[in-house]
Image (cartoon, rainbow over all chains, first blue to last red; front, side, top):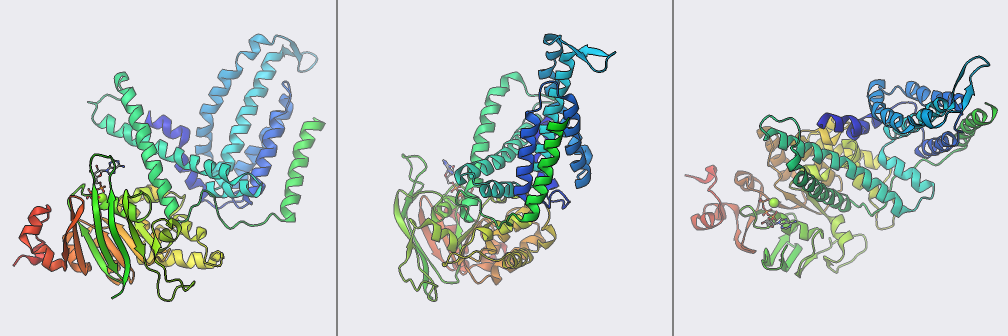
Amino acid sequence: MSKLVNALFNLREIDELCMNENWFSMQKPVFKLLAVFIFLIMVSTVPKYGLSQMLYFTIFPIVILIASGLPVKPFIRKMVLPSFLAIGIGLINPFLDVNQFYLTRQIVISAGWISFFTLWLKSLVCVGMTLLLVATTEIDAIGDGLLQMKVPKLFVSIFVMTYRMIVVLVDELERGLTAYLLRSNGKVALNFSNWGSFVGQWFIRTADRGERLHHAMLLRGFEETVIHETKPFQSMDVVKLMVFILALMSIRILL
Amino acid sequence: MQEILKVEKLSFSYDSDYELLNSIDFTLKRGEKVALLGANGTGKSTLMKLMMGLLTPISGQMYLFPSLENENNESDPIGLQNVKEIRKQIGYVFQNAEDQLFCASVFEDVAFGLRNYRNPKGDKLSAEDIEGRVLKALEEVEASHLMDRVPFKLSGGEKRAVAIATVLSMQPRIILMDEPSTALDPYSRRNLIHLLKKLSQTLLITTHDLEMTLEVCDRVMVINQGKIVAEGHPVEILSNPTILDQNRLEMPYSLRG
Ligand SMILES: Nc1ncnc2c1ncn2[C@@H]1O[C@H](COP(=O)(O)OP(=O)(O)OP(=O)(O)O)[C@@H](O)[C@H]1O
Ligand SMILES: [Mg+2]
């Protein structure tokens, strides 16, 4: 259980990844945010049968992953669960959508399979890009980026706080489970009858610790806003962004 | 010596039928190092949270007297309602260091407060200033080597050192420390004692480490049943059998003849 939780949301591992300096992490947060945002929009507007376009879009996260020098294994591990979820969601497509789809003049397959793979790739690519963004950008920097993009301060600080709360939530869950399992006579899973009190305790402890962390932030001048020095967006960044958008557009329109 | 802080008739309770702190009075003098002793659950941590404006008292007030050479030439004392100024001038090291750290790296954590800092004119600190102050604070607690680590993954003692550095970097005038020596190995505890002796700030320390109290502090206050029940020089208080007995204290070895 604890392992599953870890694999799913090991945000601390992600926090650690943020500290590796690499090509992608050195880009300005606003640039990365905008680029990923535009990428997600482009991908989500790919039509139902746009499998070939999706194949091209898939190249982006893979190239970034390799170019950034991030460790590949933890990344793949994080992608396993979302990919199964996406399979689960998309798998009815081949049964509902029985139109014929001509791959070539000879090879015909059910259109449902095409739309299934398109959907599957879409979700994988979106999750992957978001993970890349989170893994290469410290949460405060993402907050800064949002502020620069004129997102309201209140929203940004809620976002940053929520992120920190998730870290605490997972940490408290781990501790609670460890404490429980150490005293559960060798049982490896949580007894059904203990679930209620366990979950209750978990929320109370998390809320408590979240409050204390919030206090710690208040004591050091945190005023419900994120304040950091930010590097201004320069013409070079605009050029880079333009090139990126152009590349995405050409896939969407030309293919 | 001049007064720097005065607590007057401060009362507080978590639930209405029991007053945990009952009209507490005390003062701190400039540069003084004071220990706040008392049994578990007598409200020492609560008192510190009140002083930081994290809890609101039922009644009473606290006054923080401005320094003589302050930038605004103000002479009016600062009250608890001016939370912002209080938090700028008083630093607080939590009883549980884990609650104090929340950034992705130790460096970032120590820098967090500095990045938020504005001088009275509204200017930020420069990146070099911030880096200089972070490095100095980490050096003071002998934690420079932890700079790039993730705070969550430090040992208990390491977390404590970093938590102290986060407060030192802000250069507050008064530092409140809630049981700073618990969970430290003898070497780290010795370091802490050296550091506390060296600090020029006014210190208020809650602790159950009576040997440290003897070494570091100029004065001791004992809290019991919501009141300060004894106050005086550490040797005098810690060798008084009646006071020791009534407050679950024990005579430190170095005072036993
Ligand atoms: N958030 C809270 N809500 C309700 N009661 C609380 C809360 N925090 C503390 N208390 C109670 O108030 C009393 C004083 O707590 P406090 O933490 O101030 O004690 P302390 O003197 O610091 O003790 P210790 O030496 O163990 O750290 C305790 O009885 C505690 O149970
Ligand atoms: Mg306490």
